[in-house]
Length: 135
Image (cartoon, helix red, strand yellow):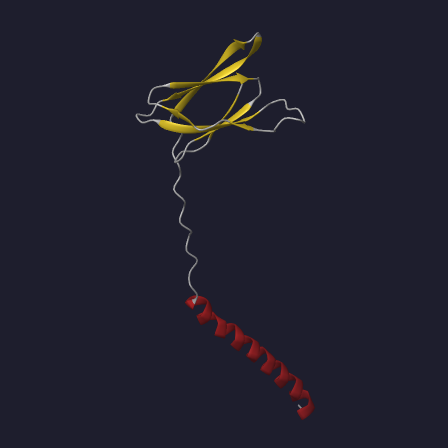
């Protein structure tokens, strides 16, 4: 072989050797990196301790529904209810939030003036939100 034929082989060998050295140099670095630790899971809130029942009601000659929320926990419970009406008018708000209401242990709070298809979100601190729909 002549010197001119050996030169491309040496050049290719040198290039492959450098590439291999770069790959092997990264292995210890990859092992030293901090392992990916799982993120702590947020504590899951508990189910809202209420039972819900709907009743057909007539108020001022208009038929509708009422929601009865019964507190089944041994402690008083302060809840907030947000109502999304099934039918809205452009002049009215899209949601209606009732003021916070305290329900004593074993007591019932009746929410009237509801229509079929209305959606209610019932929330209390420390508990999951309960979503219900008027039948």
